[in-house]
Length: 166
Length: 438
Image (cartoon, rainbow over all chains, first blue to last red):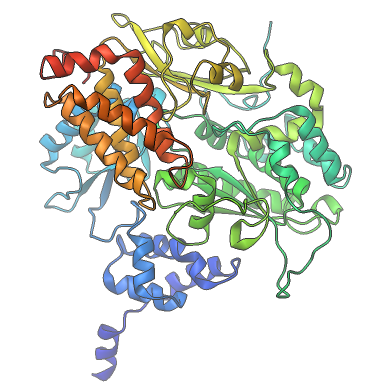
């Protein structure tokens, strides 16, 4: 009983997460130097970084949770709220804007019923804006998960969303 | 005449990556063999200085001079007795709006970057190297990790490279977003696990950079040149350029052109040749009104500048910057106010928030542009924008170059497309609404 209490009160990292984080720590001068790597590692395992996860990472890195929170909230690809199974990163920088990324965004909203920053009720998709994706010759572009989609049009969207992600 | 294209010689039409065997079969790692253990670091530095290689990330600072500020000589431990590392960092955080050149080099020829980095690290005698790559470049990061492992196995990286007494460890750091990480001191802060706030200079990173140690940060394209220069010499490199600036350059064109893309061409190729011959000219039904020569934080140039050479000095004298060399075209059916509003909203979003002119000034500029675009503008708004350009744009009023860069498209849009701003204000709305991009 008391063991159970402990696991709910003290946030913990999994052995896999610890191993991956420690591999990063091995080549830096102090533990908190891997704050961003650690946040990414835990996010890769858990989908996002909850308050409990944040505290667990901070303890492992021997830094305060508040300081780590300052780091976590600075970076747009560290998710401090739950996201869907597939994160859509829609480029809305200049070359994609010229090629109509705003229409694309409207079509995504129409098809999935979500605006920027929102997740579909079935937890399939989260829609976020992203900085120029470095594929401006193929504008408009977006990423779904790790995959880049180029010259995106209404047809691409329908196909993608029907298949449920990548 | 066939052009020499050292940086893209391994780039295949289908953009499939070149592995170690293919890279070596095409002369790869000969620059490394020529440098490590054969030439002294001082000799390597001299060749780089003589070559007149300038930074390809946007600022165009002479690479050899940048490296010459790194302290040299034996210094195995620092004052507190810890190993006295020196660092080389590759800035692969390509995020400048409209820039898509480093992705090509990273995804198609990872070994070229690694060879360039080893030669660069050898020159400054760095023992640890990082590739700081933006989070979204998953494919490139995986290829680089694979390539580093292959190099370690082959003895190109690790202890006693090629049997010499030089050792180098290389790591890939995948970032977590934010445009400001591309600023070299912000990048260093981020690599230390902190918020990516830029740092005051001096001290310069060459003396006190990553974890307080001497550090050089260079762009991907810059580093990809290094071993070619060491292997083939400064004169060869100078001979590649058409104008005073040396080498080749990855130029790109995006927007309403027939064939948007990225090409390695002699430095100083005329703008018109890049847009008309390589990018195929404007799409049918569109006319060119202006262009940003090298990414979202460069001043507009217009039709009268089409015959200029794309090099640092020529574009600088015309009132803009060559920046990253990847142009963004403004066509006659796209609203210049909407164009600049998109850029300004981007820069406002990406401000790190450290200094007031940037954190509070950029959202103000974006708001004024939004008012004008949406028919709420008043004539005084143009004076407000002009004042912002002068105050926020002045180097020294801000902590780094982000906000002054953000002012460049605004100030030049006010100069070249002022009538468009006035039409928005007089007509209480955007005249491009009818079928154009606005």
